[in-house]
Amino acid sequence: MRRFFALFILLFLSTACHAGWDEVEFTGYFSVGAGYQRALIGPVDPAINGKLLLNLSADLSYGNFFIESDERRNVLRFGSGIIGYQLWQQDDSSLALIGTNYQQAIGPDLVTAFGKQHIAELEGLELRDSDFLVGLRYQRFWGQHYWAIEAGQDIESHYGQQLRLLYSYRQQLRNWDLYYNAGVSFSTAKVVDFYYGVRPAESLVDRPAYQAGAGQQLHIGLSALYPLSPNWLLELGLAVNLFSKAYIDSPLSNRNSECLSLVKFRYVF
Image: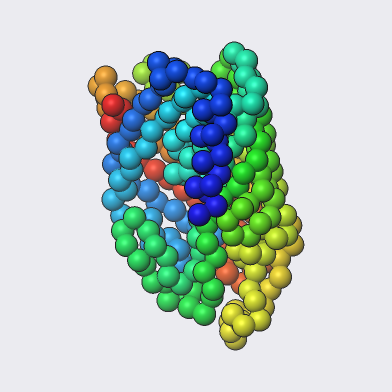
């Protein structure tokens, strides 16, 4: 509910800039593909693995208001989008008020695009719902280079704060567009403990109570785009997330890193 309120505020701000409808820019996408993940919490892997992924998204701008679909430079996870309002903008840099989702839900019963999924290994846990952060993003383009800083406050679930530093380099290789991505995320103890902590009421013999502190993630990724026709694109992605001690010491964690890969065919309309 809070994220819809945030969207309303952004729409109101954009309307206040008195943009005309001739300033609307819209690009729609339909994509079909498959993904594979080795998540930090192993039992959530089947939510992605072996499933056909369908996605309908769009990039839209109207005055200072914008919506961005899942971004090839985003190495935190696949499938996240951003709504925002440009506070200041030049040709090569901008400062924007944004709303975005960083963390997916964790729990024994998850609602996915394929319906409700029960994860027996996580029985006894309360649902950790997905978040929605409102904050600021500064980004800068310099030739093939891209830098961004994002800082946000969650208004949906854990109410913690997160900071992300991102870098990407774009290379054109024949008909391929390659994006080499790197980033680091800093999360307060409230964030890490909400998703990876274990409350006393949730503890079992093989799942002791655990209270997490602040944590960091290191992100490394590679994305590639290849045009198949004027409207169809082949999109490939591979990302690795490395986690700090606060994450990997959790009884919920089965690994010390996370791998994500994606093959997707995208139709642009």
